[in-house]
Image 1: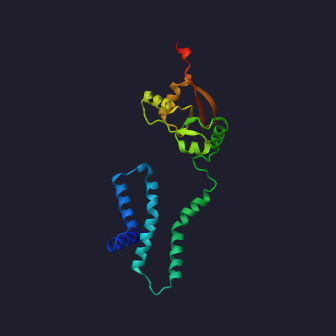
Image 2: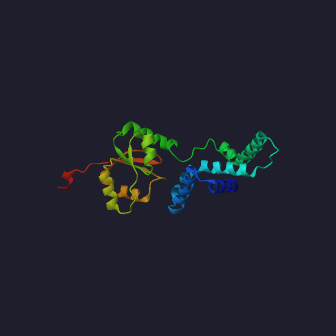
Image 3: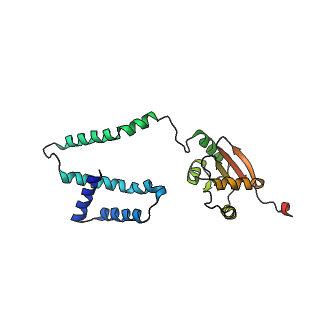
Length: 210
């Protein structure tokens, strides 16, 4: 695959580069200059179809077995690809009943269902996975502040006007868990199950400080 892709790319560049070729070059340079190890696979997705395009050109360039009909070449290539993907397909088949860690887990689904029914849609809930919470919980969401300074941590929540904190045993970081322990007098436990705890942030009562 890499060999055919390289041949196809070189042929395109030597002939006359077009828009798709400049896109491939500039995008690849961007990934090399500004690497992102956390989202490397996602950033490579736009190049997937370009790789296939170049590989097809490289395969045509070699013109193997010209006397063989095109449909037979296609059949051989198809069976070869199926053979290469067969182990992965088998693993998917035997693990089809396993639910991966995520919003489809029963405990997570139970939590999101409670939030949809009992948390106002305009309330901001702080959670480690804000996009999943906003999608499945039907509320506004904010990611856990990325700082170890408890003062800055608190100021970010106040500035965002957060009203709830959703804590997960598996997803929530230690900084947020420590913040919850320190803020217990200002938090009310709304709901919990074996993996999640939902806290409501209580408003400041000026009379307490008089």
